[in-house]
Length: 189
Image (cartoon, rainbow, N blue to C red):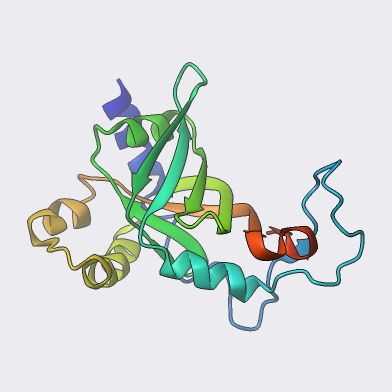
């Protein structure tokens, strides 16, 4: 059943997601503001907000990422994945029978976090199946970043037999422990 839903998700999304098309160079960065956190004493001004480039740099450099998906009964499932920040989105592959893939076939809502909690970036977004063009753009940089030979999986990935997900952010949080009180930032897309 989950495999059928995953195939349906793949077929519906296959032509929808191509990396690098979300944001043209001339488009502004996402809107920044303070996180809504009553009782934390964050400043009420915009002074000290982190630039979007701070978050993107950490999203690109992270080696491991935490991804949280939602199980069919509604409980969370968190796992470590490898992935790339490309074209303003997070991209990762996983086995079609994995809990992550089955969860995302049922509910596209998810959260991705970078590995370093003292300079944390938290992405809340929606996962879609990447199309073939996005998969091609993903493979070589992924192999380079992780020094991992994808040749045994390449054909299945490009033939859409195994999922590659693209997570489009809706809101991103940046928390720099050293400057938590003055620099914590939320970006909305």
